[in-house]
Image 1 (cartoon, one colour):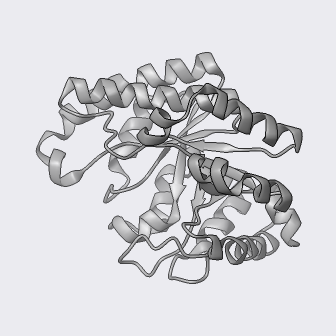
Image 2 (cartoon, helix red, strand yellow):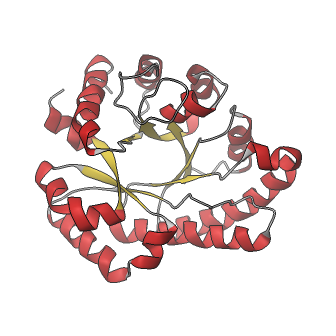
Image 3 (cartoon, one colour):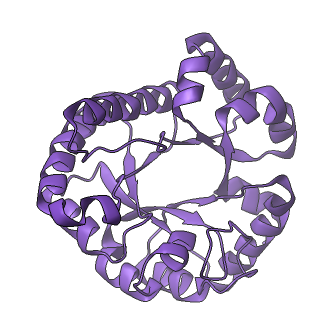
Length: 266
């Protein structure tokens, strides 16, 4: 697949501060659709006018975007109700910005930490479910699709329980390929078998199985063939983001994803 066609289909991660202060004009010139990353510092530093300016610039050039909600220190299932409320407010702010930008979707994390909550999983899950219900209602009012990502979960159990409680179409699954290999103890094929029908979003990046390296696909050990062959055979067309953590991997990553789309067209 030609690079320009791959750019049209794939989003590339970029924090909002870097997008606004450094990369906006270049991104527009290169016709790259961003997945705009948010965090607490960004939400506290920038005002509505800043997001509106970026929105105007992107829409004028017909550049699409997705949004990644804040995740550092965010814990929707926290035992501490004040932490939980701050977490809900951060996700809601992300949803509001996604709505303003006309984003294809908003991705967020569970905040699950096994070493902290292993002895209180049911309590955590109940707390998380209460928080998620509030976030889903907010997303529904804003017409923003949301996708729950896998991060530190060792297996698919937690996500399966959450999706069983929340069958709404507005909530999808963001399968992060790198996190499966860096953090989980469950094969990628099992994540796909257990949660494939809820996949609405993909975070595509590679590693060697020990660290979350965010390499271009093909530069590590992630089996992208098993994923893309499943997507093709099941007629799934999720939103796809290459989660690059440095500028040098953007083009190699897009080219690698283009080759996968050539091999498994959908």
